Image (cartoon, rainbow, N blue to C red; front, side):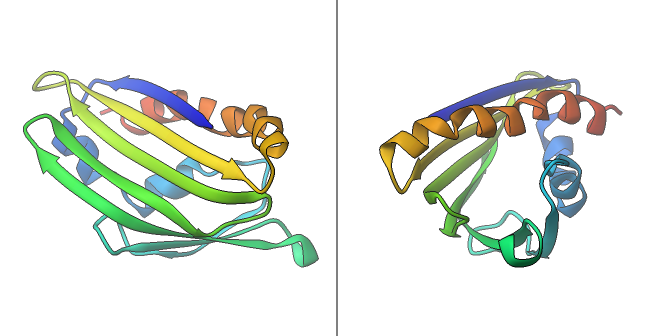
Length: 146
């Protein structure tokens, strides 16, 4: 299943890239789910991100590995892939892109692909995942307001 979100930002892609860091990651975290960032290496290939989601006995771990990063004249992008995922997820690939629109404008793209342990679960959790990521455009706008 795929989710795609695009946000236009009034900031150059290199300035957006500079601010894609731990602070942004925490700022974007869903407020409805107890969330603890245990490790954030960065967005370079080989870096890892470790998260605890939930509380007490319901706590689940999420570990993502950055498997790709590239900067070119069109912009900057990186991919995080889930290595340890909370149930019912069994596959997660999130392609983050910051596309250059002009010298002072860029577009942030969240291109997500996921699967659950059963096809019906993949469909069932789509509205929940959509709602978690649908708030990002507004949050990006606020965070990157210069």
